[in-house]
Image (cartoon, rainbow, N blue to C red):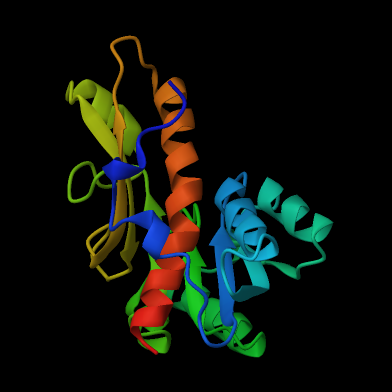
Length: 212
């Protein structure tokens, strides 16, 4: 099984990929492969999402997300968290960089760092995260392993607004994914990612349109 029925996405995804009145200026933050960055960029290219990616921020020098950005001629900026003693110091640099690139909405697409009030205050109710579980279940970095260990039959992914408490902000959109009897963290992760790539662009449009 490689996908789930659209009926298992809420709100209905077909009504969310609507055009906003002007392009949404996005700053995307990623730590790894960047597949969700790619999904957003592809949705923009396909005309499904009226937005433009102003900049990609990445904190891991080896992050493949930077390669994806360079291939699309999108500015990629390395902000290595190891060079900052305090999270607030890191977030001040992030805010400065996002503002320099005229970002309106911040998209955490696999950003593996906890944020501080510094970033939240700079972009109030305009920071979005994608998480591989049906929140509020299975918060944190081992969400997929937690789901398998708990023997749940359905898990999925959630797009939500970012709050100070980890994986606890207002939910924007969710997609359900069945857990199969022989699933491993890797096989389940691959099927969840298919749904992440579907709902993240739609959730961005929904959130931005709700504030216009």
